[in-house]
Image 1: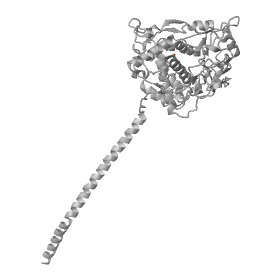
Image 2: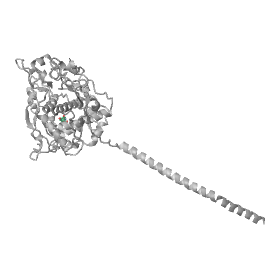
Image 3: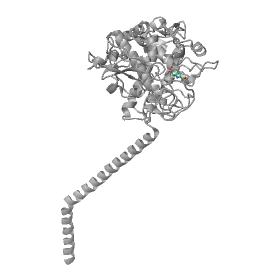
Image 4: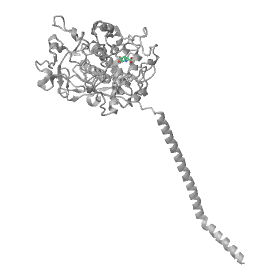
Length: 508
Ligand SMILES: O=C(O)c1cc2cc(O)c(O)cc2[nH]1
């Protein structure tokens, strides 16, 4: 959420977060090096949808103004909370050397590449985030009673990835004995679903690149649209096989069996008005295809579901919510049938893949604790990128009336530095410094197309038969004409002769 340097009581009180890069004194945002400037934060002022009826009850309203009103805005390819880093896909002192970051299908990785990826995740799970810390109290309770300290905590890179997802989906604490308000979600059930998760992954990828000192490190993806009831990445060289002793557990041969989750005590947070902290609790739970109470989520999406949702031409449709119909976003998110029709009982694509996991990965406040989340979301992002590529110039991301957090110019919660949904609504290879190595299934042929093709084929066959028959008839008549012509003179001579003879006979 916020840079460590901005979270002292003094810095927080100033509401200004413009640190200097490279340990330089008094050079906010590296301004003297032309890297950036400290400017007022712009927050979205447009109306949001009716789902959230409260005002001034939640720190996430008009993000991040409750905490900070000034932040670094970086120039050109410079990036980061102090403009000390490069934009994704660039490196070098001046951030002008492009670095290819290619996200590949995890199944195509070699044994060594698989091991490196798993090790990178495990290292991220144990490495304290070098820059960011998390608030463990709402703003009103963030300062100690004497006002000299604040309630921020260190957190590891991977647990920050989990925490930021939790923070974006958590309920609004209303206090006064009222139940927390759950009709709010800053990262799901709205157009920001795809843009929010895109940035979420970019941040993890970038943090791992920095941790490894490898700007080419790329998150792979899991093509979850394979149908059937097998989790093909649940193997010990990837995300961990099923434990032989516990059907909800991960095999002890996988490093992920040692992982412990954060943000599990959601009922406590909601009743006490606290916020998840960096404390780890229980192991990851996962039982792919094992939800006996919901047979609909025992199978993964089918390959043709991807192509069906890519056919949808409108990014999102009113009310820009989980009830939207004919919306690409609501379909890829998985609240509509793959062809776009909203149906409250349907779970498809992204949602279906989550629910299929049936455990930690199927609960919104916890799901990133299961590392499958990363691969599931890179694939979702690859589909989003393919949709953007196929529908160039789409400017139909809603400016207003989307659920809170989801308008085009809303700064996505809880990211820092501030970044809007609009900034992630662009094709990745050209604008965000990464691409996907992916092929997309061919579009299935519709019944109407089958009939059309059959009619055209039949007409074609009839035309050929007609042409062949006509040719044959012509050539036969041509041949017989030819023969008549060749023999004609003789016949004629005989005729003449006969006639002549008969004539002469008659004369005689
Ligand atoms: O019930 C759903 O449709 C559902 C579950 C679930 C879990 C998760 O982590 C998500 O990000 C979305 C989601 N949807």
